[in-house]
Each structure stands twice: as structure tokens, then as C-alpha cells.
Length: 475
Image (cartoon, rainbow, N blue to C red; front, side, top):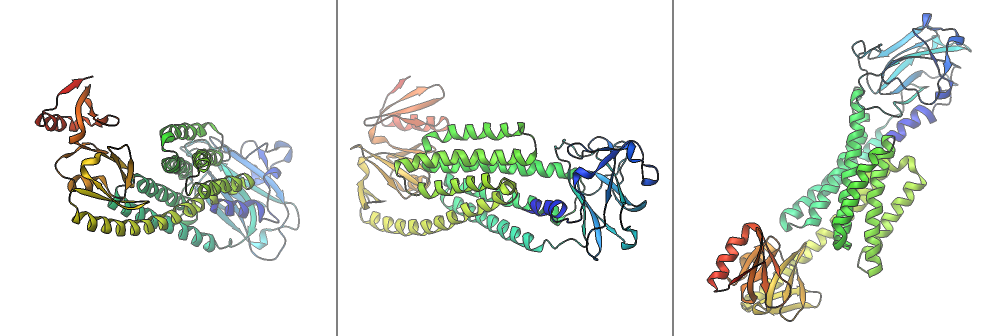
């Protein structure tokens, strides 16, 4: 958003300003700052001082109005400016080599005294060089032109961006607290999404807050692209994990390949937009699959993602500057509120579960969609972690979701239950044996599929099974 406002300042809101196509480039030094027009040639394409020294000239008319004027330059270059042979000032010190150049600021304004203007035929000369930019940009000069002085206030857009960034960082903190309490993968991903989007908003406003030396600008753009790429991959991970978990790894792999491939696209704005659209597009695919299945919440998520894509296609100039962190805020803040509400409901459900469980120590009271169910511990084959819940696998083939954490159940279940994997607790009464497979292993169950054994838990599992006189079969 800030970038769009600045471009408007340089190019759109300059009724008497200098457009890029009126510039001419002049060879060598400009004697008396009024070179023979025959020695100059029109600039073709963009003004590009990267790796060289440029002398530019334009004939302009005095802008309409009686207010004070200034000449504005934005870009990765040092510059000096003259009007009608009088030096207006310098931004850094241009030179013919990196050693001779002193880097200037990314933005510079040169006030113009009213007495310098002629009625017509005002000669404007700019000397520019750029030897310290780092990576090469396709559009190194953001804009040059004459406009009113002082420039318009940026307080309103800056306040809006700070408000959004603050909300995103608050959301990141909130999801971080939820992750500390619940240890859920979704809350950790949302913590990253909110924090990354908040950092991107800060980078977008950095140019307004600090008029930094121009060599930093390229790395700021790299940072914006990098944050966008991380956000895109996290977005795919979150939506796929919620609506299409079976394809989550594949979609994340495609997202990683897509954001890396965006580096081949010219221009940082296009790189950033492409990386973001890769994430949004793949997330929309996962949501669309869930809509077809009729999953709860998938339709609203898909509508939001499609609306963002439509806005990006209709207004591509605003896609990176405005849509990114506004989109992120509109996505993660409602999710935070929903997560807090669900956390409160789950806490109340857990209290009810604990109360019921105290009366029946041989049963586990499960809070499910059907209400409270008492499940005999002897019927539980295994307890498997399922993000915000655990899945109880029963001897009769049923699978029940229970609003509890695997770590808590590990301490509450009796001694016949053993943690065999970071996401699995097994009931040893249902174990027929174990099979070794290299450094890992699998529990062979009397009912249902085998259960994985972590490498670091294999010895404890073997000791427990040998104590129960169970023999191992080697795979």
C-alpha cells in the first residue's frame, strides 16, 4: 500500500510533473548543465543507472499554481539535480565508479526556489549512478517528477498499516499461547502465518518510517518476497491439514517448488505476487476438495480464497502492497476468535469428562459429537494423536475422537498402556508381538493394523513385551 501511494506521488499526482518518456540521456559530463540537444538521445525503456553514471536532461514548464515546488527522486541511486544551471542539491554523491560514488537515500526531495523558474524552457538536469545496489532490478528508479512541497502527509495509511500489523502480532501471540497449552500443529502454523504477515507489513512501511540508504532497498524487497513465500507455504499447510490431510505433504511440496520457481519471474513485485498466488491457489484446491465432501467450514474458506484471487486479478497493482497483509489479517483474526471460543468449550468438556471419569476408574469418559460416552479401558486398542484431539481405536472397529491431549492421557491411563510413538499409546493387552524393521519396529495387534514404534522407544517397548512373555518376529 505504501509503495502504491509513493508511486502515485511520483507519477500520478504530478499535474506538472516530468514523465519518464520526456527524459533524454546525454553522453559524458554535461557542460554548463545545458548540453546541446543534438548530443542527447531519448531514454528507451526504463531509466537504469545500475553499474554506470547517467546524465539526464528534460525541458519542462513551470507547474500550475503558486505554491512551493520540489523535485522528487525515488530509486536505488545517488543523484544530483540542477534547474536552469542552478544546483538544487545532491542525494549522496554520484560517481563514475563504486569507489567514487557515495550512496544516497532511496527517496530524495529537492525544494525549488520560485525565482529559479522561467516562463518556458526550463532545463532540468539529473546526474545519477548506482554501484551499490546489490542485486540488479528491472525498475531501479521508482519515479522522478516535480510536485508541491512539502509532500502530502502519510499519517493515515501509516496508522492503518500499524493497526493491521499490531493485530497480526497480537494474533501470533494468541496462537502461540494456544500452542503452548494444546501443542496442536494448526495453532503453531497460524502463529507463523500471523507473525510473518505482521513482519511483512512492517517491511512495507519501513520506507515511510526510515529514509534508508538505497543499497538496503534490494534486500528489503528480498525480505518481502521471502516472507510472502513463507506465508504461502504455511497457508497451504494449514488449509490442507484441516481439509485434505492425506495430500498435505504433496501440496506443501508443490508449494515449495512454486515459490522457488517464482524467482525466475522478472521483477520483485511479480515474483512476490506469483509466490503468494501459488499458496492461495493450492489452498483453494484443498478447500474445494473439502467442499465436495461437505466438510464443515470448507465452503467459507474456499469463498474467501477465491475472493482474494479475484481481487488480485482485477487489481494487480494492489496485490502485493495491500492485499497480502490485509488478506492475512482477515483470515487469521477470525480463526483466533474461533479458536479461543473452541478452547473455552473444550475446557468445559474436559471438566465434565474428568468428573465422569472419576466415578468409573475402569472406563474412559469420552466427549464426542454424540455426547459423553463411557468406553471401557479394556476395549481400547490404541490412542492416536489427531492434532487438536486424540483418536481412540476400539476392539469393535470403532474410532472415536476425544477432546484430550496425548501427553495428558499418557499420565492418566493405567500401566497397561504404553507410549510407543510420539503420536501413539498402545494397550499392551491387545499386542500379539512386534516386528523389527531396521532400527524401527511395528507392534502387531490382535485387532486392526500394526502400530509404529519410534526408534528411541523400541528398547522400552521390547522390555515391556518381554515382561509380558510376548515374543518378537523379525521382519
